[in-house]
Length: 266
Ligand SMILES: [Fe+2]
Image (tube, rainbow, N blue to C red; front, side, top):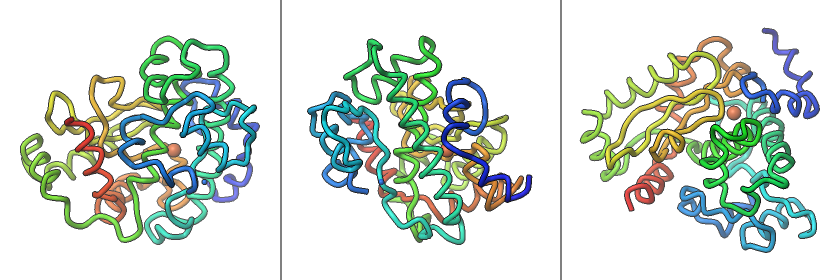
């Protein structure tokens, strides 16, 4: 694939793609006032009039009457802040276009359903297996909300002690965790995600297809890496293993993982 194929991506094309359950291709004020734990718990209120919806409306300058349910948060860093491991161009497409498409389609597909007004996490869990279009978009909105926070400039490095202990208890060692996480991402055939999750109190490595997450496997995600081609192809082309290695070694925001771990074990 040549790089000049990417500028052809537009929202209209993606909107169509988002309605097809298995096809590839599917702002910061919002997070101010919303703790990572609230995001981690999926406690972003869905109904208009709630604190979350008001924050969402502020960030997109949408009037309350729009009843916006999902909203695109700003990245928690500049588009070029993750270079050289993830380029400005990748984040411009991935966040500004792909994530936006999930938000737009998710809002359209949520209207009139039984999940309108529910928390994002409840929408994801409730629509799984029942409403594929809504699930795909809500699931990807949930995954990407966290994905931006699972990365930071100068990421990687030391893992907070409590999380490190839980990783060793559940998986055996930090090295085994990294190896398993990368392997899960490499072996996820087609689009999907690889994860660290808490299941039955233990940290596990897992992987999911498309917009699924550990939430629909009876587990709670604490770290996830997007292995859809839109996440790495501009920077790594077909070298998915190199992308995954760079993610785990140089991009992970372990403090956010710790927050999600703490929330998961409560
Ligand atoms: Fe993505």
